[in-house]
Image (cartoon, helix red, strand yellow):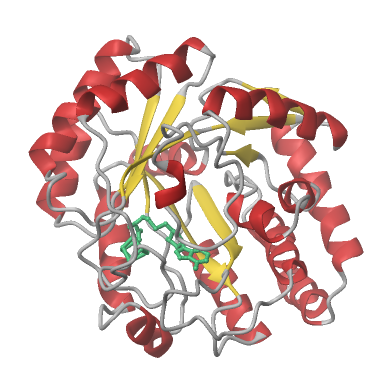
Length: 343
Ligand code: SAH
Ligand code: SF4
């Protein structure tokens, strides 16, 4: 039995203690006590897509829609930068008003204002290879695009007809263009069993990702999946530990969805191998409208307050905040391997 299938066996048996102990050994080996920060900026909740699971899907007419103007984006970046953040994640719905030219301008301006010291991560959904290439040339460093589920049929059903193949092609484009690439999945989508979670973990490993974002699926009452059952956080914790064991060098955030499902959800993910936190630095007045799932936490706090709160939370689990921009490690190894193969 291979090493990985032994861990998979423990996953299927729900043996969280053994899995998290092994995951924490690896986390300490590769990242010490550090928990890295990414400032999350939710620039628009308009979306032309209609994913069945998502609270800001196109057909949810009860959402109060907003777009940040460029000035508000820069103000949030400036205050995050002055507080020490060195990565900014710009996330939004698939919003045609934020076309590639505008996004390129925003990326260039963030790079300029931060003296090139901050990494820019984009999470704007599926775009053409040409668009991704333009964003890379403008200075974007990283891209987050979860594959959501590795089951092609479930993917097509939940993503309103968009195929898994298309999503994976986008990830391939991003990687080939030199982005530090992040992907991941939700845990507990309707129709998912433990074997499928394992297939998701295997796919994340095959993709050689720099960042792997997972979180519990939380049914949103204004979506077609409103009546789906809530899967307990434990499944996400087991998957987190498995990801650390199988992809030891990837950055794995303790996600807000976990903290929204259980008050100590993020701390529990940190104890299972997560090594990143993403304080939400969006303006307080728009936060309640970026409701991908219900019960989202930290809606009243500004991002700078969140950093103080997170420092206390990581200390409770014996770790410390690290303000390094913490680039992806996998991409560099891949580049190194290519170089040594060509000598
Ligand atoms: N539009 C972009 C980015 C915004 S959505 C995109 O789709 O890639 C960011 C992530 O939120 C999604 O990848 C999905 O995994 C997560 N998400 C959406 N609805 C959710 C829900 N109901 N519960 C938990 N996570 C959800
Ligand atoms: Fe739009 Fe992303 Fe939500 Fe899908 S998950 S509806 S693409 S914001």
